[in-house]
Figure 1: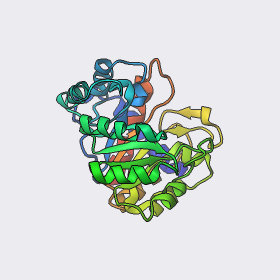
Figure 2: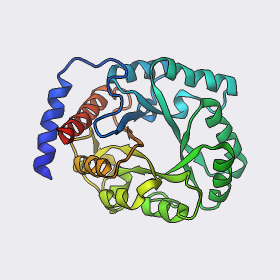
Figure 3: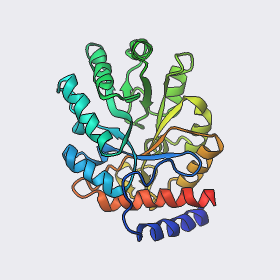
Figure 4: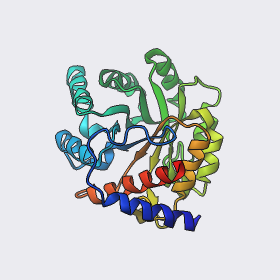
Length: 274
């Protein structure tokens, strides 16, 4: 595994030395993987600034965070804000992470997602709100990808906790697997992907120097998480959801680390397809 990581890292560094690709370059990666960015990574930047950075990264798929599409705006403003991403060449796979923990706010959040044209919400419900979330998923025909948030999450810390909660629910109720938070719980990322099967809707990617230290995040490829094995498993399972970079460090200047992370993942995918 370490040898494979060194091989792919070398390939990604070579890719990083190429000219910056144009928007849409990434498209659907070899094996059908939809590689993109969760815009939480660009939380310190305005929507136009974030769109500009995403263009420089050459990704096509995005998951829009509230920083770039505010909850408080009117449905018309939400629709127009989402259109700015689409007009710039991006495909909006989802929005989030969206808290679905207050019963009085659930319908408002689904109205927000509908106005934005989001086919899916990456979300954080509670066990108590989950039945109403399922009812709204059916009403609005918007998928709910429940995001596991690691040891600090009292509701859904692991992928398995999500899968157990949704196993008898509507098929549009599923999992957003965060590989960093999963590793910190001691759960096996690769096994979790296999367990999830068709309930795996989305993946948030980051990397860690230590699986016990949340603060040890580094650009993808520089840490210890099994990124190459993850992509190999996803390809073997014919996964067609998003694989979204969620870059939580270097908030004031995230581009270098994000560019390195995307290049590494493209290198992995190119190596697997060779």
